[in-house]
Image (cartoon, rainbow, N blue to C red; front, side, top):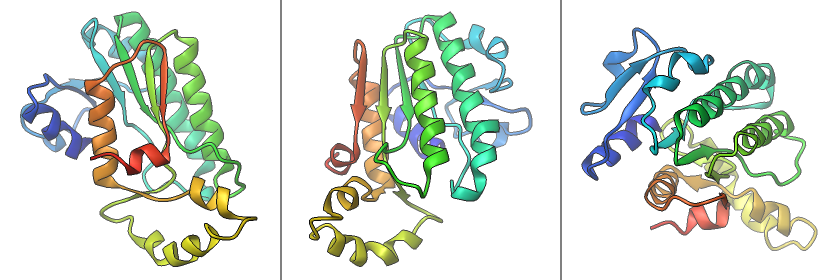
Length: 203
């Protein structure tokens, strides 16, 4: 997602600094300034974050699934906790975090819990923040849920399953990118949550 978001930001005249690991410089889109640091150690990158800037947290396990629950605890959660600490130390104006829908479901409970804890760490740091909460994002390499869309559409019309089916609807990558751009260009004081219905309406 970052490889698509960064060119959008640069074309919109934003200055972009991107936190990367050593050896990944070649993956960074042209125009972005690389910050080579440890994403799990706030002290390694806090000094490189400009005061009054906007911090966008995108690091996370690709293709999240129930079998990756240990990785959520080893990678997703520690990285956002470090980022929240670094952002607080740097005096960040607005923190944008891709979380996940919090509708109760046993399918991805561990992932939802980790993302909720990530939100809590941002709140505990006292940061102004936007939490974007998709369920599943459709994009390159992530098209398989489309096969189940007819089933979900039927479930939306059944009283006993309608609320949950609507709460777990898919969103598309372009909608997520527009939601991110909206959050970046419209910072808030306090906290804002962008749920699935709002993401799907992004134009």
